[in-house]
Length: 369
Image (tube, rainbow, N blue to C red):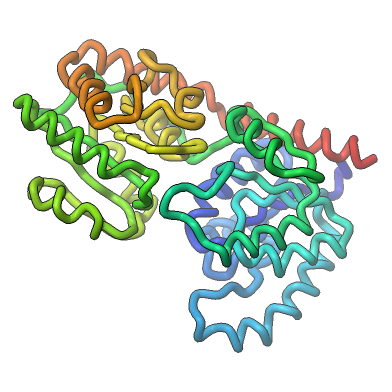
């Protein structure tokens, strides 16, 4: 890779993209250099500005009312971005896609800079369907030279579905934090506090979790649930009405609040009906928090059942309830799983992960040459 150029981590999304862009950016800059492109509304702008490595913040859209100003300014920004990438970029790494990529990634193409995009999901899940987004994603692929995944599960699925674009895997390449993990826990609170964290979609299995907790209640086992994330709770209103003690934070959760929630709770619930992989699972390992998860997607690869989590026998309220009961009823098991989660996150050393990505970038550069 040209020593005078650097990889450019790219994410135009307002919030979610920064969750993967920021920690990888920090890791890459521990040894060597990385630059960043993020949308003008990204929560990452102040951090990248402070470090002096923000290549550009192209205009983005936050509502229909901004369309006229966007159309007036975006073509000029794309032209400037093309020149900056031609001068400074070894490659563009899109850490999380955005609909605006279909417009701005043309700058990399015309600058002759290769583009690799991380694909986190092999398909749209229940509750996420969108014909408009599907169309935008198909158009975006015109500008993508390489697709990279961070788990074998997604790699195998994507490789079968996408033809004509090379697909790669950087195992263990997903980071969600750039600070050391929390120490192991010794015991749960009374009653244990269970956390459901993330955007609320059908595939996340909130209905299954609520049914599982009803089973716990029938068996006389107390647990305190917190639901934290944006999304439509209307389909769950009847079940929530039977559980008035449930704490609900129905909004986008600021990262500082996420950290506090992870510290305050004892168990992470991942009752997914389907999944690719979970960034929240890595957060649980960062917090040394034992998890209970369904056996779907890459979750059994992200966790080691009996070491840092309990993986249910199947996807059902009864199986999830049984795993919760097993964990809640055994403080020794809880302590062992907490130590296992701590050890699993410690293996995600920032420099080690950064070197995996630099090796990947170098391999692309060699193949290009």
